[in-house]
Amino acid sequence: MNTSLTFSGKRICFLGAHPDDIEIGCGALIAQIVNRADIRCVTLSDNQKNPELQNLVEEHYASMAVLGVPKDKVVLGQFETRRFPHARQEILEYMIQLNRSFQPDIVFVHTRADIHQDHGTVTEEALRAFRGTTVLGFDVIRSSYGFFPNFLVEVSEEEVIKKIDSLLEYKTYASRYYFHADVTRSTLIRYGAIAERPYAEGFDILRVIGKFGCISD
Image 1: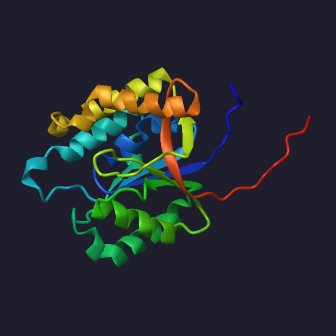
Image 2: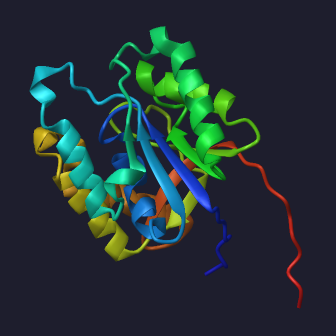
Image 3: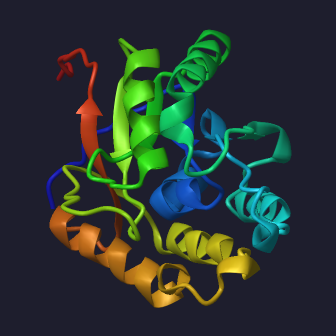
């Protein structure tokens, strides 16, 4: 097996449009790094205008807690679901302020292959707000078409289980196929196969800022 590339950051920001997006796209990675970096999980809409989703906020906090993310590292915005394109400028300004206050080394956001209007707006504004920062795109299976990961992060069996368990906290979405444990595990196995590892979480590269350093003998 080839040696894996090692990457790191002191401050890591995960950006999603709705509760559940970040866990679906990055749950195993979050479980891996939560005690090794200062992270923020920022979701721009709490989805509370939908009367069928009244339990979603507490489910989101419970899901993040399974991954090891404390409540004070979880941020929920008030942007209206499915109306993100109309609030593009306000979302950009929100992210610019986030960049100033948190100054992340790496940002994870929706892949550009995602066709959901809110997801696409988050990604485009993130690329504007976090200029000069590495940005990687994650997959939310229900709305991504043509996603193929070209940045693969090896994850462990324990981290796979934590991701599965975190999604089980969403009782509101229990009947949706993309919350099924088999779907989650098989996706991580597939990305692992691409990486020639047992499991991996997959991302696409939106921007990488790097510096090559020689390893001394």
